[in-house]
Amino acid sequence: MTRRLIGAKSGWGKSRELQRIVEANAPEKDYLLVLDLKDEYRGLVKGGLASHFIAGPRERDWTATDWQALLSANPKTVVARYRIGIEAWREACARMITAARRLAREGNEVVVVVEEAHFVAPQDGKLLDPVKGLATTGRGEGAASMWVSQRLAEVDETVVAQADERLLGGFTSDADLTKVGKSAEYPPEIHNPNAGTQQTEKYPPELLVDGVAIPLRKFSDDDGDTIGSEWIFSDDDGKIERRNTKGTEMQTTHYGKRATEIIDP
Image: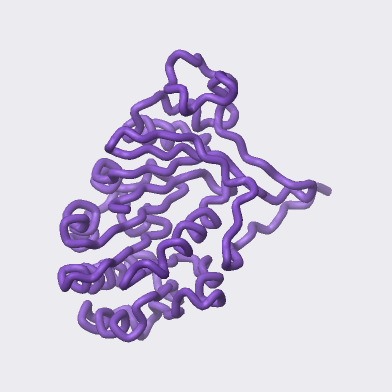
């Protein structure tokens, strides 16, 4: 794993799949840092794979040295945003990333997970130097990264362009599909679950289902809960495959937030 871009529309099962990937990597790495905007990864903590900490009003002014001391004492840590605005969170993330990169330069295997990456590395704002460094030179330092977002169109172009692995699910926004097209070497329409069957000859055989180019699918149970979804994995070495998470299992429980339903009168 080097620099992986993970993206899908809301409700596609993105956070569960990310937790499954993190769960597999956590025991193998020296350091794991999960930048958890919405405190969705408590399952990693309850499962004993990581410590839990917050970036709140007291921690918003911590230096990179302060965060490095925290990580040194807690090598696998989920840090959740708590009662601070997005700008303060972005700056805190930059200092946490600096700390992680320092640990990587000391010869440690480090993984940094940037959840809701469109807030930490926004397309319409200046990319903070430590964040840019993780997206560009982090690989050479030994710091792997995962950049996760439901709005690829809002993620800085540097992050998208520098990713050497991509795991992308369903999107319905034209802007997000356009961004997928910039990073994928196949027509992005297959990522739109509402697009209908595509022209098969445009796609590599690895993306076909029984020889047909049908869009990625999401699977739900009788209660409407997502129980699996399809994704496309690709990397810069030419590997490409269609993946189905239905039936996959993990050790920890996912406690991602669930939206309140709107009741029809």
